[in-house]
Image 1 (cartoon, rainbow, N blue to C red):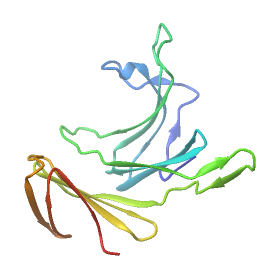
Image 2: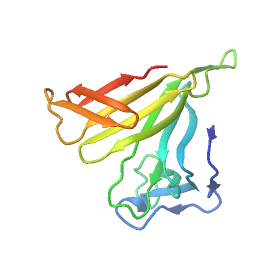
Image 3: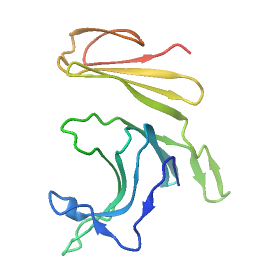
Image 4: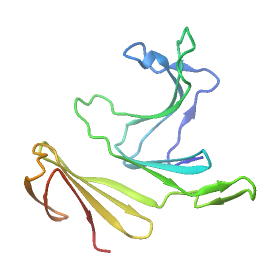
Length: 180
């Protein structure tokens, strides 16, 4: 339904996404390039609206795709896909949030809350030991998700001090609602 980035449709000349490793079975339907920040897409399925917000970097490929390319037996489902491809990176952290929201009533032909309430997602810290992800909504509320990457024990104590503040928790993760 909606994106916040430009893309070029390839519906007149579909081509597989690659030559091997399964990419030969994926049609490339459209593609664009990311700017810094977030990529947003919004779609409608089964009487419900969905939004995806992803952390992207300049130059990341944003690809709309569909299964079924080079399928001699026609046994692959032709499901749509959205792919974020990072070029020339050996390691990468992908952060996305999918938000189901709203509804559509086919009898009254009215939509309720068709657009996302999420505004921004960012990575505050990402290293061998910890990943901190902050996300906020359009109402001004924000949260920080703290993940322990190297010691995920349920009883492990963690403390991380970064520019945005001090985070202390026990266990593999912690979700903190930030002050408004």
